[in-house]
Length: 486
Image 1 (tube, one colour):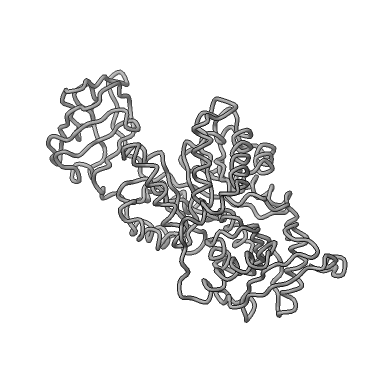
Image 2 (cartoon, helix red, strand yellow):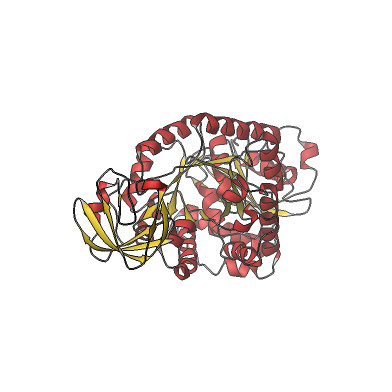
């Protein structure tokens, strides 16, 4: 399979969540044509049969467009919830006492069941408990194995099974529930490209997921807990990518702390060469409105200026009234920002020092050579995708054309900044490498006659992790006419 899909001029990728508003073959195709580079399947909603149909639709689109298409399955993670109430709701009054206990009977304005034994052991005096995305705030006064007594600091109406956040402690809760394990096994059987792990608190959570995935997909760790921020470096070492999941971060942290944290996470991920996705409420008003607010436009622009690999739409494309418009506008914002003459300087504000390896030296040199000789593109031959990730970490100013014999690798690169991945036959020698790089650069429109292209590869050819060659080629422009092969 050789992709004829025209490469995006835009470097940042767009990850679109699919759902009731966008689960038809026609809409998914329109989203891809409007700018979606990858699709998120949210395992929190729907059945395995629903997800199977969605994944089959995306793979069918992949064949239609003749372009590797990226699928990310997002696991739900453990959801902490309070129990049920008499009459399905109650009113909590500021300054009153409220108890969470182990009793199974319906709650009222003074107490409710909390069906999570681990919380009783973890909280202590002064711990905050946030209910319904932080709309209600409780402060622990005393805690024991059977009941937690709290003071209501922010009151309001509470109803059945509202979510509970415990931001001040690391809970002894596994990041993978039984549902997640079943969803993970299903997603791997469907050959998705990425698994997103929710509720990550520590590197051990990532290690456990990696063990279960066993190389069958790439692993993205969602940073949505203060505990994960505190152990970010360790999580980054074990994950293939991270997501700045600002929804839960914004619940568990003061809102003013989220923007600097976003920048810190993006910078840390970029320094380690891990793709980083910025997500949640990017164009939130477009769930019901055909146009975003100016603040939302600026928010998307900030992530692009920071050099994030991908920006994500959630409910905007999954269940909103304007899914196609959301993708189109996000595409237009990103394209406009990247056309700003100051964009490159802002992106390179984060220093990504190479490790003392041949691969990193080649990746850094490719970007330097392109700038020096005025090259039009970097062509990267890779089997595993690691060379492409190293080159992308340098945030080159020209297109990155990634040639790989592995469809699995090509699909996984859909979240990588600036990468246009093409599945093609591998090369066997240096002469074939030069010829193929020229033809592919012409075929995919990243260079024309007279242009120079920087090529990276590994000798012996076809050996993963062996990148040790960098070469500059000049295109004549008639290479496709002179060669009728692949």
